[in-house]
Amino acid sequence: MAYRDLREFIRALEQNKELKRVSIEVDPILEITEFADRAVKRGGPALLFEKPKGSSIPVLINAFASMRKMQLALEVKSVDEIAARIVEFLEMRVPEGLMGKLKMLPKLAEVGGFFPRTVSKGACQEVVRTDGFSLFDYPVLKCWPEDAGRFITLPLVFSRNPDTGKRNCGMYRMQIYDDRTAGMHWQTHKQGAEHYRRIEHHGRKRMDVAVAIGADPATMYSAILPLPPELDEMMIAGFLRQSPVEMVKCQTSDLEVPANAEIVLEGYVELGELRTEGPFGDHTGFYSLADEYPVFHVTCVTQRKDPIYAATIVGPPPMEDYYMGKAVERIFLPLMRMQLPEVRDIAMPAEGIFHNLILVSMRKSYPGHARKVMHAIWGLGQAMFSKCIVVVDEEVDVQNVSEVAWKALNNIDPERDIQFVLGPVDSLDHSSRLPNYGSKMGVDATRKWPGEGFTRPWPGVIEMSPEIRQRVDELWRKAGL
Image (cartoon, rainbow, N blue to C red; front, side):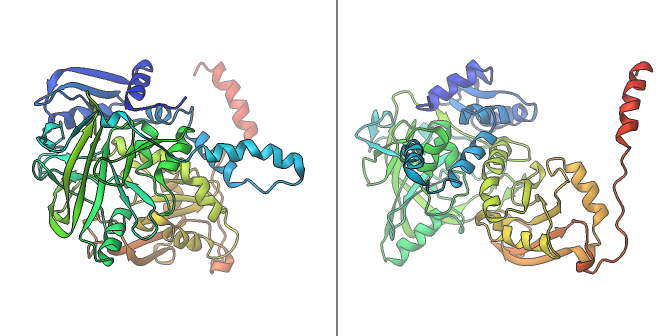
């Protein structure tokens, strides 16, 4: 059975010795960050702060901060199980004959069971407040010393496309300005920003937005997935948890939010109203610069009677977001291979903070093939932000960064094998020549072919013969080593 809410996930973490309750008072201003940073870098448990200073609401952090916790969150023994399920659905074909069609019916029913289901009421609306509330009622973190203030760091931000009516759920940090307003940090490439532009094009003055904080883990995780705009994150959450997400209509708008969320902020963004947001200690390990972003006005707060505040921190890697991103890497590899079947594996090392480095192994079939793969990846959704792509031959284990560095650095002639292109870059890239626009680099570290102008002999890798290895295995034991 899928987790109904955040509480069931917390119980599962605790039962699996992946949660530590912190009963002493700890300040959401900087101190919780230091706890969380030390814990994740030491391979520690998720943390539930039961007495955050200044609030009676507990804070959960590091709930996804290891591959073991990701497996518990998605209720699998390995995230590769989800990848295998994706492949199974992608490979469904129209069956032949009556028996084939009958065998397909359970699969089709399962697909239908993923779609979100609207319910009349939910735990997230046990308490409804349209007056007398403040965003400072919650133990919102100030993460790093030079942050501009407190930031909501794990929000599920819901908006609707005015042209298609399709819902989007994204995760955009929110700087609290005062009791009832916060920054809405949707970067220009994100769907929230696209909805804003479309509403602006229609000449409307306001955009309804709802923000859920704390939900079952698959629903929270779905907000970070790099999905095509036409895919509903709540449907994908249903696929991940193998049970539909229950949604409830907001009190003050037509938007829907997860019925079992802990806290919901309802409100609007005023078109054309911008305010300085940031700086913020970001997942790059550097402070992202202050910039102008829309302002979210909170008109109503709904919550459980005894809510739990879910948060994360980002900063010098590895942190919790690395493990969330690693699961994305494994889960979405089959989708990449549907479009690029020559790709054998990909890896995004922690030091590359997702968009700075992608390592790709491929089955090379023709001259220039590695460059084709680079450009194809730059054309795949959020992979367009990849600052550096290193392509190696299929026998190279891209999960072993040391092996990739050894073979790539031996295989390249820098002038010949490095290609630079211009295009969109991540908004958080402080080194780009312009905001959101800069250069990217592709490195063809594959073995070079005569068809690519390489006519010299290409040496083999040094390896001992299997017979000698086996012989020395026996001698090794005899020698007492």
